[in-house]
Amino acid sequence: EHAGEGEHAGEGEHAGEHEEGVVELSPEAVESSGIQVAAAERRALRPQLETTGRVDFDQTRISHVSPRVPGRIAKLHALLGDQVDRGEVLAVIDSTQLGEAKAEYQRTSAQMALARQNLEREEKLLEEKITPEKDVLEARAAYQSALANVRAARQTLELLGLGKAQIRNLDSAGASAALFPLRAPIAGRVVEMHASQGEVVEPDAKLYTIGNTDKVWIWLDVYERSLGDVHLGDTAEIWTDAYPNRTFEGTVSYIGDTVDPATRAVRARVDVDNPNGQLKPGMFARVLLSDPHASDGGAVRQATVVPASAVQRDGNAEIVFVQEKPGHFERRVVQTGTKTTELVEIVDGVSPGEAVVVDGAFVLKSEAGKAAMGGGHSH
Image 1 (spheres, one colour):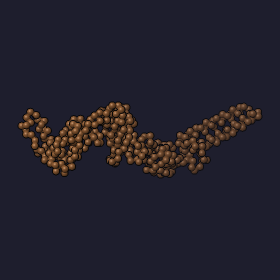
Image 2 (cartoon, one colour):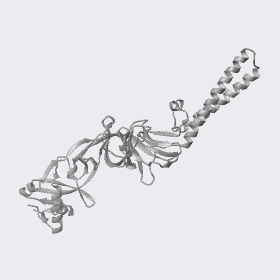
Image 3 (tube, rainbow, N blue to C red):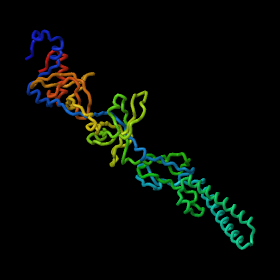
Image 4 (cartoon, one colour):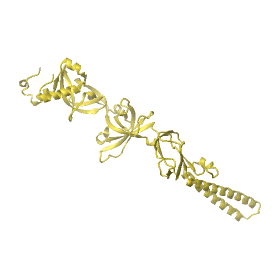
């Protein structure tokens, strides 16, 4: 069926290579191999970039909780994995320092009340000309000093984590004076816990980490050569191994200002809605970035594309099989460009309208390998 060597005189070595890349199959073999073809198309292609990323917490939705007072953990209320509301008590800490601070506030408050009463009495006596003005001035100075002591004691309690309402409602010093309720600063899930009953803790101890994963961040490394294809507001499609049939959507919200000298990449971030909590911090993800503004800015270009399943890897080369006529398939090395999960741009090697094998190409690749080893064609 093929022209002999004499008929290729003058065409050079390329014609021989062309023939060596041909696989011929009978109609029965084509059908049993499940080979399907589709036409290469000329299509408008907007800038896209496929890369990988890692899921992380939205850093505005995570909080590390420390006690702010030294003491002993008297009771644990929240455990690892618990869902907590903002302000909910996570643990109770028995703190001598807190008890002393509360007692100091109560002592100075009592002194201030007494100083205020004394000042009011001296001012009344002065009006009645019973006491000298000097006594009023001394009483006023004593009151101002007591007021300053109260403010200092209140500030100490605030620094230890008590709110203004808690300070106003302080009970008289008793068994509960030293108990400090450690509260959740945000609503979320307890994703880390480093607390145990009876443990002695310091203010810098990170006892809990509360995370809200309704929204997550995905961090990407965008290489210097691809920076021109990534913009703020670009849309992103995300896939993970855990949910191979589920596509998540996000938006590029941050592009770094510096290039890492070691990797020649810029860090970028995609914000993703995650209401069911399926994306978990630490997961790896595949990310396809697309510029939604490309058509407005004229960045869309025409390109020859084939289905992604048509392109096979053969050593260091990428190949496709082109059906020149029924049962007659030519192996071609191609140069590819933009790739998506569904399409691959063919820069060189295939023309629009040519029929490329999209199912069963691995069979033809195997037959082509056998033919190359045997020095002939496969039938």
